[in-house]
Length: 316
Image (cartoon, rainbow, N blue to C red; front, side, top):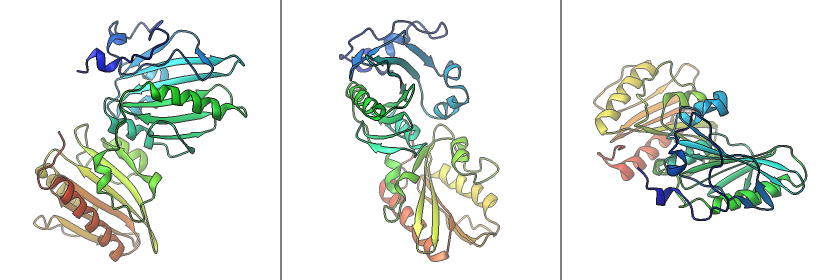
């Protein structure tokens, strides 16, 4: 477990918590992995802070809690800010346990204009979203005015400066060939439910995804259309092989040869799909407009998986 020294920041101006919901354990303030400045960008904290855990997050987020619970979400700290002009902003800082999961939640919503806050940020319609270190941050303005974007950006930068560490994108994203990849199409996740929310591929969890696996999804522009790619990384090469067999027998209509570790097929709608088992990874291409595009993409991604993870580089 993280130490208190790592979790709490030395830049606090106000006490971290002035109040917490009854359902939050008393020790929540001691091991919270993020902290907010009490005043910044002309704003001061207004009202008591609120802290929510995995067990209580739905009380604040409603059905929106499902997104965070599909990752390593630990706690959410909410602080309301107000400036002298009466503008109000709710700052939500989510401790996601790892930078990879912080990125995963951020990438789930591709909307908004890019902003220079944290590692990556998007801003629009009175909402600023960014990730840094192990945290995903969301700032929501009570109402949008001409000065809202500047207020959100300035406050966001102050909060980002208070979050320790930088964090990098998940290593698994590196297996996606960069040529023709649509940047904002990239998603990172663990569970089948997260894949289903982005693209409904099969009727069952034939891929064997769970909290111990990781996956990336992306879209490519081809000469004659677009291709989709899914790369799953398992705990071991044996797990990846089992997932390849289970998925291929559900998704592909032709006979699957379990000795080759790969299959390419024209599916019912006339598009092409392919799957390759490579060490601890499973690479799947679907919606590809033609066989050459499909096979070129699956082979390129398979080669990158082999280089990155070899035969035994499974998840931990």
